[in-house]
Length: 140
Image (tube, rainbow, N blue to C red; front, side, top):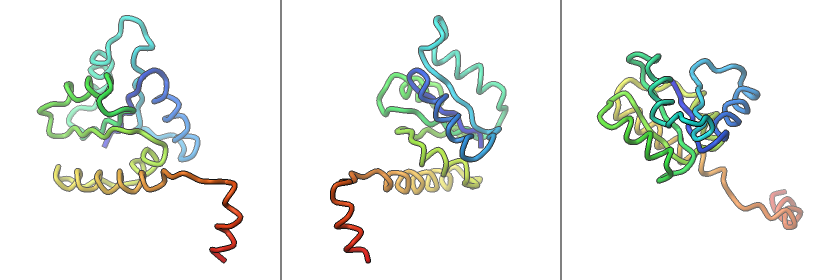
């Protein structure tokens, strides 16, 4: 499955660079930086990139649910069975998506994606560094 990171400005490019720093070059990972190149719409960027994928499954990962990039991707993929969309891009999510082997059936892919999203969100937490000493003492 091809994975397209799409964001406002250069977040997606930085996310791709960081993922490849950790995991090495990823040929199936692509980035679209919206509103960076004047005169080039998100739709135009999507069309230019995705047209080279043929009939492959494509996962779009956007930065912000309800944002303009997410809306543009949503409109672009409506009615396309092999295309999937996840919002709320973060590094843990990208790394896990790169490591998974996706199933064939759409319903199974969606279930896999739901599990991955829950798993990546579990790493988001408040860490009170001033209370870490007490927590470490309690753990041992």
